[in-house]
Length: 100
Image (cartoon, rainbow, N blue to C red; front, side):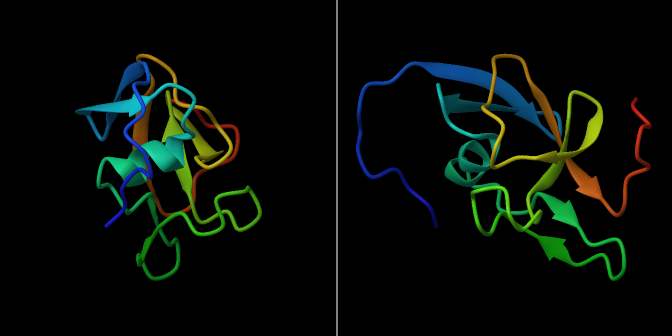
């Protein structure tokens, strides 16, 4: 569905998404890295459980909320992916201030 516009020779970083090893180009946002790797669902709605995905890619809509390294409610579109990062789908509403 999504693909890069160019095949530039860029450095890569490794991270996990729902415990699956994933790679991304250095400098990608978490949302861009997930979309490029074919992962379109980042969270599930707290009301209906409907799958949600990144939408605006600029931090306005909050559709791309994920857990990053145990912290919930992180906007995947405004956070750069880092080596060893652990990203997980956020299912429903997260309790504010509660970390794993």
